[in-house]
Length: 515
Image (cartoon, rainbow, N blue to C red):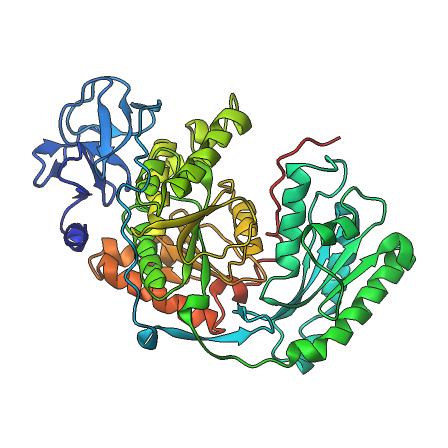
């Protein structure tokens, strides 16, 4: 792939695999433009990132990109025609999972040569990349209280505590009017517990109303937690109401601050990095630049003992067999298939969601015809290494290397699950220009193309569009992303942190009914 990518700037379209029957427009192409080396001339305008047929394709024949089926011709297609959702049919086809048939173990970097970053070591040995105090609500009814407590701790108030990155609230809209037991409640409690004990929180306060279904004692018991200096509980109905709970919360945080500030960064191995992999506002270049470059960085990270957490289950659908074949065991591959079957058979039948075919308007405008094509690019964020484990939403991630966590494709919900599972860094690729932050974890934003990067440079940390422009190879860009991971984990702020993003992205997955 790299040799092809080095030559992208030499023509108007990009061939990704010798056996493809399409090429991808590198820039906007006018009608009657000859595509060098393909023997075809465009017969319609083709926007940048869209596909062009390089030969006649009969109705029903597979459309192949990276030599992977991304759909079928909805009608006979002439050479030089633009291919998109109007003439690509989405339908199911057989994909043999061949569990673990292509498993190859990671070849680790010798321990003495492993990369390091400047991290904060917690008493339990986990390593933080940021240092916050968190205020979490057990239920929507205490959302205002947790926000007002956090709002008290302005930069001026925290000026005396230079090692604290902030006091952040984690309100949400759940916790009552829902099933009192079962998977929806277990999932919510697991998520809140994962945040309350996250390495990036020096301390946390859980605040409830008192009569909600998600009772704090049950939440604590579910997660095996108990109160202590770093984890306190307040209940509004017992504390005296809204104002008194806010005052009590402010007093409790104030008491935590001196110890929370008493930290120092020190060199730690990159094996302590757990990186949540996200993509949003994807386009036709996502699978060519940012996603495979991030995948290369994840493969480097795995060799250094770190972990990449691939997620967004609807956005690997159609290419899941490329992951199951690389699974370390049949059992791991089957775990992934079980989660996909749950989505297809129980969660989404008959609903107009992307796993059933149609991607978002932004994805379509960016050149992606359907979920198969989007998944092709999305899965590349995980690199080419073995799949080591599969986790349910917000489960604690313990394995090293590439792992998968079952989440929706909606970025805040997906990242919330990853962070609850222990991710201490997020890498987020985007072609259209998603704006995203996720306290208490820094988010690195990676652009797929230079025009968008230049337009939104205040929000983007890295430009993988240099691959398209012929200024860097995919491997060089992956190494650049890995270096940015280490730099960010060491405390250098990302663009989203400088802009103050991340206060509204705690969104636990709601899978149950409301009553």
